Length: 264
Image 1 (spheres, helix red, strand yellow):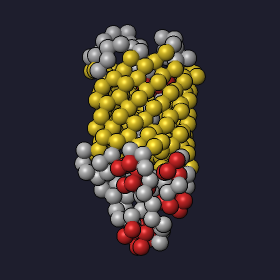
Image 2 (image 1 turned 90 degrees about the vertical axis):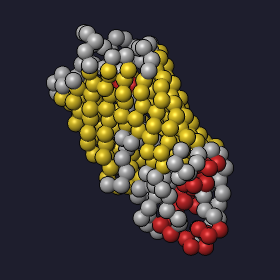
Image 3 (image 1 turned 180 degrees about the horizontal axis):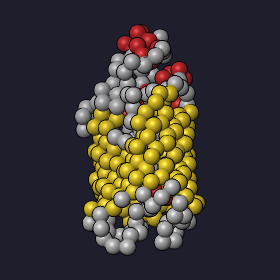
């Protein structure tokens, strides 16, 4: 297993608002949280058509007025004390491209990237459990490891259709903007790469990488034990979609996963 579902499953395997909000209501201020671990499937690399099995890991842990959130290889801290507003720092790891099949496999490998940044979000409406809530979020991450030296900005909106004690269902939409450094690292083909792979030379610019949708559902057998499942699809657009790497793979990037969840 070479990939872990991150907030890019990103496209994108985000934890929908139905589940991040699930821990907001408590009879007291005791520590509380949720951990979910399971299995999923994701593209073998960005722009790939083939998929491979991946771990599906999610988690929220509240410590006083601070909430730690884990999304695969991404972690962040919500510093807001407002139940509707969220903001704080974020850090993530983006695994590189190696051992790819076909012409892409003859391009230079890409190292693992470490990305740091911040996020801000706001929740509108919803009852005390979160049902009916609309959540908007914007995050910004910058590579600090010299893997791609690029920046990503991701905007998302989610709607909690059902939030009952034993069942939750939420929908979300997202889009991601990337700068030129990111685009050329993952979707560009330089002269040497074109000669070795047979792909056309290509140098994309900055712009929107994708648009996507997702559905997340959860069922709780007891107050503590349940399952969470997700399916998502992103569609590559702009210069990213016109890349020979994408043409060799697919503009559609599908993700899915199911996990066993424990609340405490």
